[in-house]
Length: 95
Length: 416
Image (cartoon, rainbow over all chains, first blue to last red):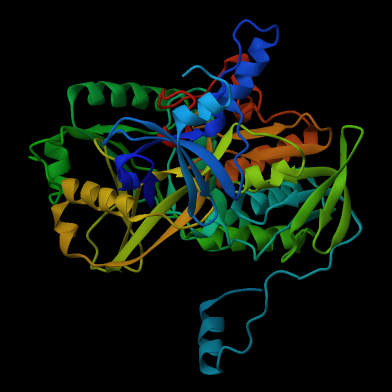
């Protein structure tokens, strides 16, 4: 697989480390009253879709940036690559 | 269908026209006591043990394609019980004991061959860990045997003992481990279940669950609605896809694992050998091909095919322990989809939905578990209590903090 890095251009997926579902960006509030339940879901439960999947890849052998890659899990086709930082900021996060 | 040398001779001389199917092709009935979703090894074994051990007959096994078309037909056929944790080891040891009596039990030649499995170790720390594992295996009644390099050199002279980076310091044998003719397992269980009245319904895809007031009353399929008192999901690899239809999220990611076969060679490997410093395991099939595999590709996939970096990585692992295989040509490779669970261990449990049961999360160790998985799932379905060796394989164990994490990797499925 080739991941088209927004800054570095097309890079081999072997340069990256895979973490998992991009929803891992949205860490629950640890002070919320339902924090135990929310962290169980955050840490252990996954949508695991067959089809389009937004996921986190880390460019360990490159610029050490985190990317959100949208990839089809039934064909491995990559349709979009964004900086995870930009995705998190778009959701209202400070970094 | 009875098999004998005489029958083979007679059929061979008469154009092999007398062979008959060994199970029926029934149409689905409108209602069953138990509907099992998934006609793979585990699903067919569950049906077989439900009929044989618990006397239940009104059972259907629904299979989307043809039976045995999933991971029972796509694995590296290894059986073993060299686990460590109390939540796992008694289960896998029971499975190995069931393998030992399986062919007599269902009267079918599954070519169970206890040709031994050897886990190599490459450092003092790894030796200590394997000694501990061996002791845990003894506690569960399994066999284990620590071998020195001298013993190994006599038995397996072709290994690279002086490898500069990962010299071989010894190994842990389980002599009762080995390989099995994987397709025959599915066929043997299917025939045994069919003989006892189980309906095996192929080309029947489940498209939805009928859930009313928190109770599962049946399934919608491509061949119509089927009502059931209990619905048993047994579709490891596709668990995420199927359970999403019941609105459930699982502690599972689907990943692709590749396996490889070389051209046929003269007998070189006496048993199964695994590399302790990388991830590589290899055995030789009865046809002579070296059957081997390594790590999963490491990203979510339902594609049943992997990518080339893992091919390279696996080949490097092989060359690191047995350079003699470097000249063997790779004949074919394939990918299978694994339910990678959050702690690397499986689930055999009820769900929060009454009447809906779940079996999955086998990671890449489902084949060896087939008999025990079937028996334990049948026990759960028949009695509504977990089998004594499967009490910890629960869906809510993460919530309770009772993980069964053999490798101590935490909730990172692609590391298990």
